[in-house]
View 1: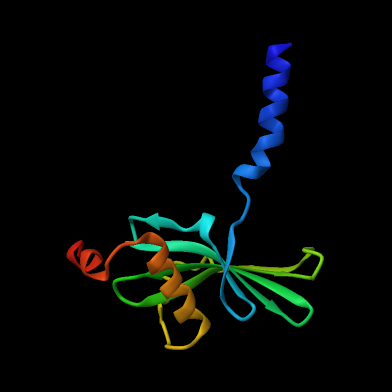
View 2 (view 1 turned 90 degrees about the vertical axis):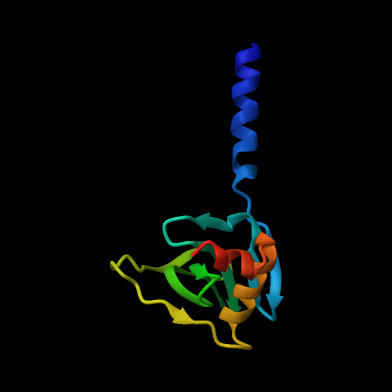
Length: 129
C-alpha cells in the first residue's frame, strides 16, 4: 500500500518538476527562468524564450555566450494560441554561427535577463577564458 501511494505521488508531482517559470522581458517576450543552464563546453548558457505574436506563440531554445555578447538559435517551435505545435525547426548543423547581440532588440533583453539570472559579473566570466 505504501509503495502504491509513493508511486502515485511521484507520478503526480513529476510534471511540476518541469514546469516553466516565464518571466516578462519586454512586451510579448518571456524567459523561462527554470530552463537556464550553463554549458561548460561552450562556456555559454542555454534557455527557452517565448515570443507571443498575433495568433501565434514562438518558443526559441537559444544559447548565449555572456563573455562574447553573442547568441545563436538551436530550436524553434511555432504554436497556435492553444499550444498546439504547428511547426518545428531544429538547428542541428555543426558549427552554428554565433550572432552579435544587438542593443534594444529581443536578443539584448534575453542576454541581459540571463546575465542577471546567473548573478555572475561579466569580469568573472572573462577571467575564465
